Amino acid sequence: MDTNKSYAAQVARHLAIYAAGVLAVLVLVIYALAFFAGSAGSSVNGNAINIERNSITIALSEEPPQLDSTRSTDASSFIVLAHTMEGLISYDNNDQLIPGVAARWEIRDDGATFWIREEAKWSDGEPVTAHDFEFAWKRVLDPGTAAEYAFILYPIKNAEAVNQGDLPKEMLGVRALSDTILEVDFERPTPYFDKLAAFNTYFPVREDFFESTNGRYGADADMLLYNGPYVLKEWVHGASMVWSKNPFYWNDEKGFLDEIVTAYITNDVNANLNLFKDGQIVQTGLSAPMLPTAMESRWQIDRFMDGSLFFLEFNHRPGRVTENLNFRKALQLAQDPNELVYKVLKEASYLPAESLFPVWIQGLEGAFRKEYPPPQHRMNITKAREHLELAKAELGLEAFPPIVLLTGDSSLSLLAAEYYQELYKKNLGLDFRIDAQIFKQRLAKMTSGDFDIVMAGWGPDYFDALTFGDLFASWNLNNRGRYQSDTMDSLVRIAQSELDPQKRMDSFGAIQELIHEDVVIVPMYERGVSFVVDSRLKGFKRRSVGPQVDYNYAYISDQ
Image 1 (spheres, helix red, strand yellow):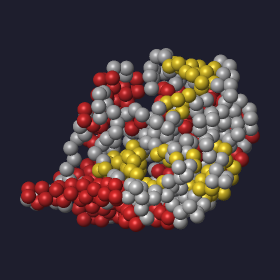
Image 2 (cartoon, helix red, strand yellow):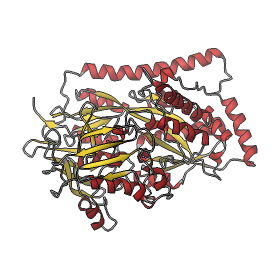
Image 3 (tube, one colour):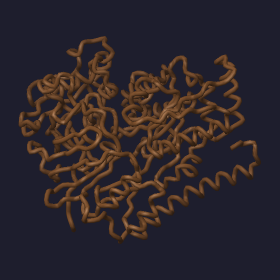
Image 4 (cartoon, one colour):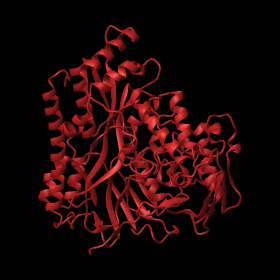
């Protein structure tokens, strides 16, 4: 929409967008309140809950590409690993850090010590030891592993140098002093290391079992050794999984179910809704068009902001049109996330994205974005076209080639992709080619850089602004577009090591500005989830940090 129209027209447009958003939220609230007292569950005649077997049936949106915790990067893998594995530190059902494999720990300016509990066992009955963590962390940082999450171990002494191949892994600052004592040296003071140690990439791997798999560790159910509440009893690729209670798990306060059957693997929201209606799965997310069905079924609707940010990520590699700053600025100025969220997606639980840092990120004393307001964005087609002409001249082009927009194959992803395709054709005359891929193939293309722009998302790994702030550091392999900036790297280094809270937050503020000025990404939306749960399932948890859906504390009750 051209901003050269009258001021009154601009005001009317913004009021319309605002009203649409308010109306969408009100619809959700009305449905939830109107049917709060109604039945919240699916049919008791289905297979969602089997009381005799103490079993539930669930659906996963995607099949994990593999379950090697040292290499996993995707949400589906994290969900399975969070139920079958456990790190030194864990989370309770109130998102508070609690002891995991480590019975206790001590964090100092120069390092940390973890004391491993003697009752922690692997699923074959052998003890989990400090050596299993030392082996796993060295494997993560081995350049041959090519672990995209290697950066999250960089607070450990020499970790980055080992990962870059400049030092042997024997120089990594981690030592098993005995079976029960793990000693860690820091590269720099890292007071938040306990939050990192709860993350999946810090999970243990037992060396002798790993070697016995001959390179297939994590590829199948029998190619894994487990130390969490559940084990993978079955894994039929592309179809189903069965998680069984781990008899060797030490903690009686987790893992109350005897069996979790992942009978369905689909990202089709309508298919999941029908499965829930038919009593085949215990919970499902709801998209906006599904709310009338939820109303008719008298379900209680819950809402949760899952902490994730979605954005258009540019490919900054040499030779790509999207490497050009003026081209990126043109695309930035020719779109409006309010329009995407309120007029196109119409998801009442979504918020238009304004920054790399979502609204829930905390600053010094309150919300980060209140203390560091993000740069104001306004759609301006005239300026966008000016930047596009500058880009054309700088690139020596008579016309722009088709732009490849990589996306997933879900209905929501396709809806957003088609919106951008039409938007940029209308406003800038650009030809966008949508490359819709299944989950595993999209990840592979993102990693190899086979795209111009990718519709990407990032969920928090731990409760700190750095979980978003270091995403576009040059050494972070989750920086799929390979954006590289010395200024960004220096700001991230400050955020990693600065002990003065004010200076540290200032660095995040500067990162936010740089992301906008360099148009590293175009923010799309912050994701919320509207969902329904079988009323007989208690203790189910959705998390912003940790697995998106968590059954570790879930149990069955008719009360």
